Amino acid sequence: MGGAAGSGGTGGGTPNCNTQPSGTVTKTIKQLWTDDPTTATAVWVPNVVVTAISGGGCVFGTRCQLMVQQDVTYASFAAGAQNALRVDVADTYAGLFAAAVVGSRVDVYGWAWRHTNDGLNELLIEVSAAHPGCAKVVGSASPTPITVQLTDLTQQAYETTHGPLLVRVEAVSGKPGQPNETFALWKQGQFSDAGVEAVVSVSPFYLSGYQFSGLTTDLIHNFTSVTGVFGLFVPTSSSPKYKQLLIRTMADAPFGGQ
Picture 1 (cartoon, rainbow, N blue to C red):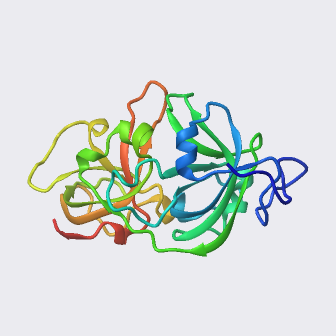
Picture 2: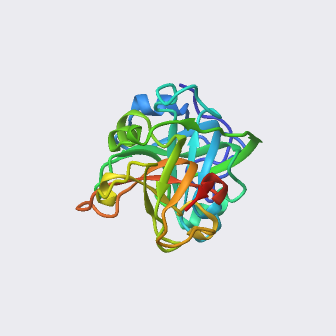
């Protein structure tokens, strides 16, 4: 759907998103999931909602990732299926995304395709030297999480059926380690000693400074809820895939005791 328009196209210097770059097609996130392109395709994805940004924000010179979804929320996990994507931005283009914050509505120019290298199996939007892109803030919103169960957050849900939606789990416990380390979650009263690859963990990667604060190391915390974008961490092609909740501020993980 859609077509080429405006300036700031795919070649000839730094792109801009003041108008739709030439050579792109207009797509919704749902349409990209339907297309599921196997080769990089230049796309213009207008008016999507930023739900999380790695490190708390993009800065020039540091690779960053944005999570975006089509709408501020959905009535259920099923209703939100295939309405969210990760935008992977190379260090040289990160400055073009620096104006975006959680809650921004943005027009995104990038290259959509399903990555299957290095253990990945993920539909995403890439911005890199080979695939330039940018974003323009066009408004603001208040993204609201969908309440789900830990058991809803599976590898298949991330890769093929749902994607990186903003979600919330309630009445869960966890035992934090070091401030820059992920830690596993379990339903309160249902402790699990399964390996980290078998559970959903909380990650600090989308927090400012990439680390937790206000949590006591090696003590069990009972969280009223944990809100975050559902993510999947794939260290290498030979490693397990780790299911994660990517919190944006420590307010996403209120706890009522230890």
